[in-house]
Image 1 (cartoon, rainbow, N blue to C red):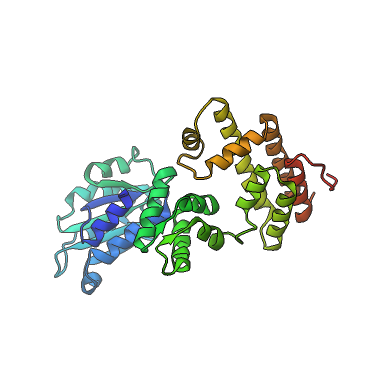
Image 2: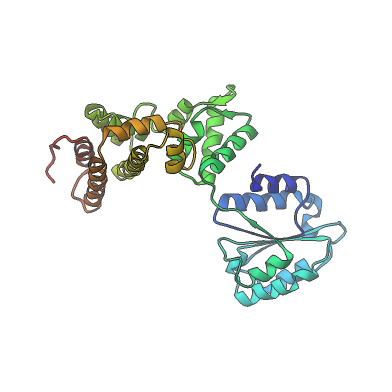
Length: 338
């Protein structure tokens, strides 16, 4: 269970640290953690008396201190949440930090911030009396495990490769990934498992014409199929800048895989070194890396950068860019003048 899941689980049981500094660069976790406090620590009938929520950009230390130092009215607990605490004037933050040790045991205080340096004041002082809870972006196996756990809360399991494909298609934004998991859960309906084909169908523009099928065709050096897929992607509204970006990412990965193959590494170790986790498509990556020489891979990356620059300056229209990309990447002469 991740730190985020442990925090939310405790909050749902009505438990939370007396004093906490919640911070990090993953807004989704921070937002959901605060929601868990607001929804579970103080009963609904007492929130008008014993719950205060402040915005650091709009409040003063006096108002916050009045809340955190006051005893509960009628009930047994009082909750004070200060959102965007890091946006408060430093003098106000310091004033609050210096009074935290005086907070009654009945009160719960959560100071919420973005990315901070905990070694700097007033955070260093706060850290001596409060629990510092950090929610940062998840990567690699941590992100895959979080997705697996989230799917289970929706009554589903993720089939082999489904989490990895979802991350490849959506990126590492937890909020976006959770949103897509909700859609996938509805799509799977009564089926207990979300398969890789579901991800391709629901998240991709189509089952056949998406960036991963394009990568596969290019990896196999199948120029006719690659060009067909790329042009169909344009028809479904995909942007050539996105296609170029994803292909650049693909070829950079192939270059890393190629170097690791030349070192004699096995597929599992290559996958961990390049992707930070087990990638179910590693065999495809290794086959594609073997199909290209190192100079060809470097040239492909150069071609992608050149096409991207010309797209942004109007040197190519969308269709021309796609034809040039496929032709140049696969070593065919393009029919478009550069």
